[in-house]
Image (tube, rainbow, N blue to C red; front, side, top):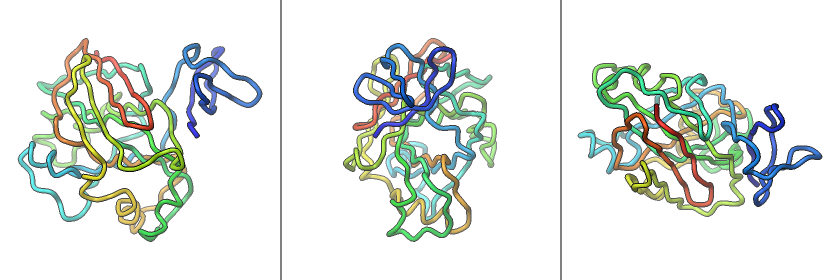
Length: 239
């Protein structure tokens, strides 16, 4: 099942995407006739840093033994087609990622039961102010500026996906990143178990699982597309 949010007839609605149509209660629209919005409005977005060994190496870092966690605020979220607004910085990078959407309130979830709390999966772009990240230990500015968290195009429930999934990022149609979720240093179930050992997760919360190697800069006028096999494409212009 594919669940999402969209604007039709001037209203923000929630619905199910079936084929080339969006169904909301007793009405439906062709997908091309609606504007897709971010499929969730998370209370919190928890991200993993350096969770692909090749990405850690390209930035000159070692792979952390424990999950390297940081937050993006809900105000950073934008949807498909919404512009990424660059902050004043010498370099702002794309980071295409698989994101997990939590389906139920949970705490202290054992590894072997982690899949039970997952509502679905979607694409996420962890847009990063690399200049700020260089001097700011907490990464608040680097990771949390407005429009730094595109999410979409919809959430796909686990029953429709077969892992591993391939993550690709294109900029202006040129392939920049290719990753395979089998290469995650810390897998999804282990991530959920680790986070819920000290923090409650609520329905709609999002976990970004990390980005593969190939990150690079964005410039005004670019079009950046994160695509994941079985899920779809998340495309945003850069301004």
